[in-house]
Image 1 (cartoon, rainbow, N blue to C red):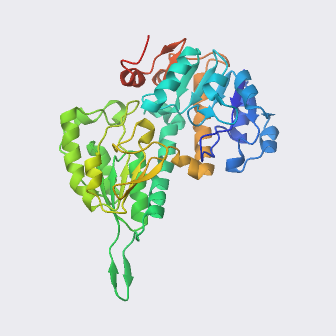
Image 2: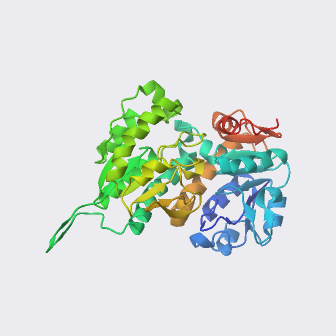
Image 3: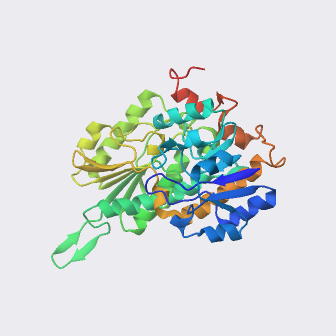
Length: 389
């Protein structure tokens, strides 16, 4: 059974789905591995290093996609402009695709339907449940750690003021104020990084436990008095709120936006479209030159006017909708992701190479399409009314 590792083609994406170390492990499991030429150049891994690990180097992307039984990617398939072909169309019918698909996000719906129509068994790395057995496979947490750190660094680069308090001969410059909305893995890493840089940090989450963790890292907590049975879902993740509670949350966020120099938006519900927590009217109340990092953009975004894939200025505010922040810190991100992917594949084929265990809890949670049917509940919910089946 052949595993194919294509070169990522999303703009600014330098990560790769396998390292020479994990290639050796796949071969030990009984797989063959083919790697597209220069797939690892963004993380300083040569073709020769992959060959030394036992992989075959393939120069032709179309051939790689067409021959692979299992394709491992980092990001969702997109149009290959050089070949004028979509990566989904290059996948062999009836093959397996494992990557980050974010199937509930509006921009992913067409991809999901294409995968269904080609009878691809598609599995998404953002669907892995929060259980102890899945920790080594939890690519979402790994990439969230990178995103939380890098989002603060990127915001600092666009901010035209100091972050720490600076004393000068003519007076003291006040520290920058950060507002972190969503204190999951991304938010907690953002809190820690902003604090290290000397910022004043406020944090908000609908989950009491998440707020406690943010408080322990030095953030001032924006209290949200909501019954926890409405806020906390399976595995400790946040769950979708009814509209009346979302409106209350927006009213709490509003005054803090006016004070903030940087806002990190990372409020997500696993497998579903991200809730809109910052409206256009709320953005208009912010300081000129302030920065919003909407890192929930892969699932639709928390800000109403975020443009996916772009860094824009609107109403005097810099709004980041960059979709592959971990790709901007690719070496460590690839090492983490490649190992998460290996453990996922090992579990998927634990009954032997070629024997998918679709009844496994982790696999069931991350299954998007199989036998020309969409299985992912978040995608089905988000796509209600668009589906023909």
